[in-house]
Length: 163
Image (cartoon, rainbow, N blue to C red; front, side, top):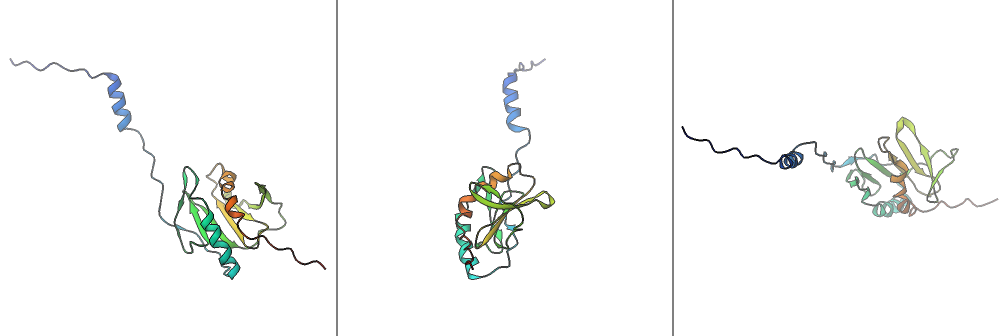
């Protein structure tokens, strides 16, 4: 009767390493496709000339996992990051001036917390911008804080002449 070759025992550690490398869930890739961001209707020359430098100055990532994405529509007035997307729109109307602004890094922003998402809108600029942060992000103010240096590039509102 022919003999079988002897069984080789594979060390348990090797099996565990091989299993760990091949099983388990892998993180889903982040979407990179364009985001539909509504373009504000304001089209005055001041809006166009103020928004383009703002959009050019925004950072590519807001965080290591919240990366810049292309937008449909006017890429000179809108921007988006991550999934679900954090969006920025430049040339929006003035926010509710009866609300006390939140100040982040010395920069005033009016908050609107409808539907759980939070919109941060500039309050003292000649051209205003709004950043919408979905409720699923835990560090909403942190994501906006990264945008403050770019938002400061918007021209300040001039005071009305006195009587």
